[in-house]
Length: 141
Image 1 (cartoon, rainbow, N blue to C red):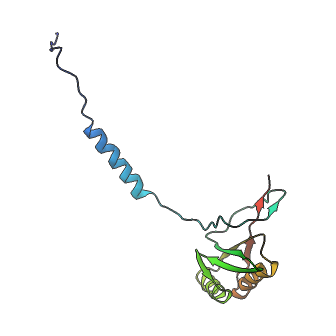
Image 2 (cartoon, helix red, strand yellow):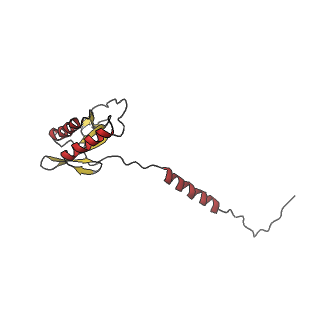
Image 3 (cartoon, rainbow, N blue to C red):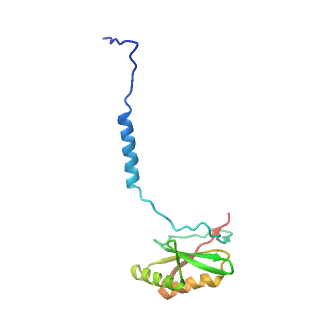
């Protein structure tokens, strides 16, 4: 059986259903994707170490405290992208400890801040009863 067609007829593929499917997939992936914003203050210059540290298991959802350097030897503290004082930091840490007994704190101190300013954050953690305190450094390859 042979079908005949005229040479003037062009074969056309309807692209509308495929475009609809692609848009539906894009919308599905956008809706189901969870966007997590990490506490990363990229303007901090971390101190370096000569070798990597072995960490068995990272703490779950730690509170990240950024200690930023100001000219004149001063510093200020950031938690959840908000500038806080040491007094309000201690209150926030106490409230977090009451919510979660295993609360951890990560201190990200600029390498130009004085040790006293990082130690003040550690003292606030101690006052709040938080024992899982760690500090971040940049690993030198």
